[in-house]
Structure formats: structure tokens, C-alpha cells
Length: 622
Image 1 (cartoon, rainbow, N blue to C red):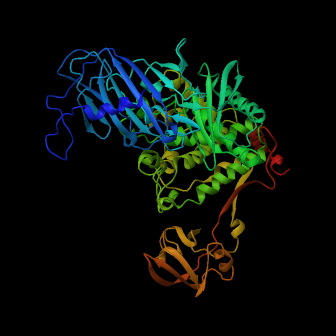
Image 2: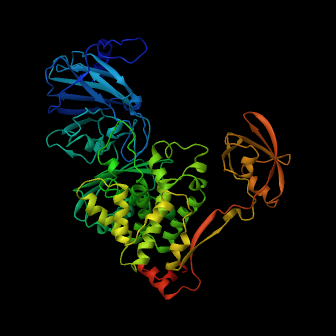
């Protein structure tokens, strides 16, 4: 697409608004175009990638030559797998609509934030052109610069309401020397052109365009690719065999792979971490130098295991609310605890099953997750099912009070999944487990491609466990009772212990302080803590303790000079106003939790542990 084509925008006569300052509306009845078979072709160019502007066109053929019909175009507001309305249309600029000759301007108007309407004026084809600003490097958005282009379909493309199921094609026009990686099938004889059976598949197929490295390998007889953008200390000869192990162990769980080929897209950046699942690919972002240290390498493997597990859990085994995507608004479900939390449970245990790390490394990772969970005050405020339902307004929009009021469905869902796995294993002497729940969900919902309801999910778990779990669900999913870890760990010869970690013996104020630009800023104040009772709040600047300056780095050392119950004077700025308050110090905070083996396990406990993890309980002590 030539840049001069965008200048047509100034020549287009828009529908006239009825009242100045309000939305533009058509001068005749807004009758939508009849639902006929259309030919849809998208094109994405990036002639000046340094501007961060993708230049996009959508060619539509097969319109009915009815002068009274208007064509509706809508832009998705969210990306499946990332449950937040992100308003992608805010990045769109220089919208143009032209007729079949590609030069004649067509009238159009914007109906709402993500809704455009075009008058085809009796033409059988038209083309829409626009630019999309792309400077957010994440797995769910778009990024374009002088080194590469990456995009997700929901964040870049219009769809035509009523025509989402129609096949389409897409052509990429890359700068010289750039290549294209995508899970979509290329069309023979057409350069950088790909086909998708419908809009959902286009949305589900990310594109990486640039000079990325591509590593091809096989797993279970099927072709796979690892496309890597960015430099770092990744060693493909080490990583790819471990990815193959993850593929093998997950395929073993479900009885095969549900795709013909698969693409791993990996972005290496300075601080990034995350992933987004797709039906035959995933996008990953990770620290560029995070592959040499064993614990960081293991964390990346867990990320791979998580996104790959989503092939089944959420991409195919999905809540009823996500069976048919509504791209215009929130899609509410209370079952994300299972879609994401159960997947988080498996992303720790599957690398262990794949023999990428040993049982002690597994429990170290599990201990970190349990510690994070028990250090989150919001677990006493927000039930797990509510956390799932409110993901759209809370999880992705954290603020200074979020730890006090919210509970991640990833994290608590992982904890609840652990308890369910142990419950099933204990009842059935390890002859059944959460694996059987996943396999039954796959057979009942994944293979036939139908969504499940919360009631159906509970029924499947109860069928595998052979127990009524109404009380369990009421307490731990819909209620706020503390999770009784020891009740479920004890049959396996384990118990949960706690201590104050590195801060042992330090009286607690209930706040988090960090140094920013020479100021010691309070970032978080826990509910009902000494700091909150003294009127301190996130954003305040801590100045002194007992009249002497104290910094974020010094605070714990200074507190070691006191005992719980002692009173200290804290000075701080609140809204630029100096305050001085007397604070009574609380008991040291328990900040480290770990699972340890029983000192004298019974034979039954030894047998349960061996059946669970395949090694004797003594392996935790070695």
C-alpha cells in the first residue's frame, strides 16, 4: 500500500452529524448489508517501521448493489486469553474507504468507539485502509519498530458482523530481508499470503515479521518451529530437547496432539515475562539473559508448559461463556480458576514429570507459590469464583489496594487444584488423580468442541473423585475459608511450616517501601496494619523513625532494635503535608512457607508419596 493512498481521507464526504459534537450518524436508515458470501482479503504493510505504524487494508468483494444498505465494520476490544477490554481502536488513525476502483472515496461515519459504517453506494466491492499505531511489546498487543513487526489479529483487524465465519486471506508486505512466521497455512504461489477459515482463526494466529531466528524440530512425528526475536543467552541446543519433553509429557496425558504443526514465538526483552496461548501456537516473552541460571531457566520451562497445556485447557476445553467469542465486550465466567489456575498447577508438575528438574526443585517452586498465596491479604476478601468473574475489572487493573482486596484466580486456582489432586489420589490410592479429570473434560467437552458450565465441571470432578464436593466448592471456591493444606498433605507424609524468613524477629509495620528518584515511597499498606492505623497510605513518602531519617534499605535494620508492642514515631509526607504518628509495632510477619516431610512417616504415607511423585519420601531430604 502506498502512503499517498491514505491522503484520500481528506477527500471523503462523511455522513453529516445531526448535532455538532455528537456521534456522526447516517442521513438515511442504517440498514445493515444483507448476509451474503463475501470475499475478504487483508493486507498488512510496514514501509516505515520506525514510525510504529502498520498500514492495513481490507478488501471486500461480493457486496449486494443495494444503495440503501450500509456496511458495518467493528474492531475487537479484547484478545481471547487476556481478559481485559483494551480498546484497540484507540490506536487506529487515517481511516479511508474507497470503491472497487480503489480511488473513488466512499462516505463513512463512526458509530461508536469500535464501530464504523460505510455507504458502498451500490458498488460490489470496496477497500478500507487505515494505520494502526503499534508500540506495546507484549504477547497480546502489537509492536513494530526497525527490528521487527508483531501483531495479534484482535488488536489489528476489523470484522464484519454476521460474517465472522467466512474464510479469508491475508498478505504481509514486509521490508526487504524480513521473513514471516505464523501458524496460518501459506497459499502456494502467492508471496507471504496466508489463508484462515474464519475470523476467529485469524485472531488466534499471531504474526512475527522480521529477521528472527527460526529453529525447526519434530515432536511425535509432527513439525514444530521455535521463532526467536531478540538477543540473549538462550541455547537452542539445550532448550529444544526440553520443549520436546514438555510436548511428550502433555501429549501422553491427553492421548496425542490436536494439531498438524505448531509454532512457538519467543520475544527476548530486558524485563518481559508472559505468554498467550493459541490453538496451534503460543507467544512467549522472557528476559533475554534468563536462561543460564537454573532457577530462571526452570521458570521459563514452566511458562512453556503453561502455554502449551492451554492447547487443551481453555483453547478446546473451555467455559461455555467462551464457546463463541463476543469481541465487543466482556465474556464473563466464574471458571477461569480451572482454565488458568489448574493450568498453573500443571505448569509446575509437568516439567518434573518430564525429568527437567527433580522433586526438590518441584517443591521449591511449589513453596514459592504457596508463600505468594498466603502472603496475599486479598485471599480473605475475594472468593475464587468471584475473582474469575471479575477478571475484567480487577486482575489486569491492579492498584495500591489490590493485594488487600483481590485474589488471583491463577494462584488460588492452582492451590485448589493441588488440594483436589491430593484428595482424589488419597481416595483412590493414586489410581486416579486430577489427570483423570482433565482427560474426561477433554473427551466430554474438548473433542466435541462444546463449552462447559460450572455445574458440569463440578460434576466431572465429583465423578472422578466419587465424592460429593458441594461443601468443598462452597468453602474454597465460593467462600473465604482458609485452605487446609495440612489436611491434604498429611496423607502423603507432608506438612506445611512457616517462619519469618530473612526478616525473622523484625517487628512488622505492614507496609512496603521502595526508593524512587531519591524518595522513599510507600507502595503498599496492608489492611488493619500498624501503618494503616497511623494513617499512612500508598504514595506517601517515609522520612524518619524516632526523629532520625530512615530509608527503604535501612527500615528493617532499624526495626530490629525494637520488639513487638514497642511504640515508635514515624514521620512522613502525606499529600505533601508533614505528619508524625506514634505507631505500635506488630509481631514479625510470617513470610516463608514450605512443605516438609514428616519426621516419622507411616508406611501408608510413604506409599502415597511414592505413588504420587514416583520417588520415595526420603528424596525430599537427600
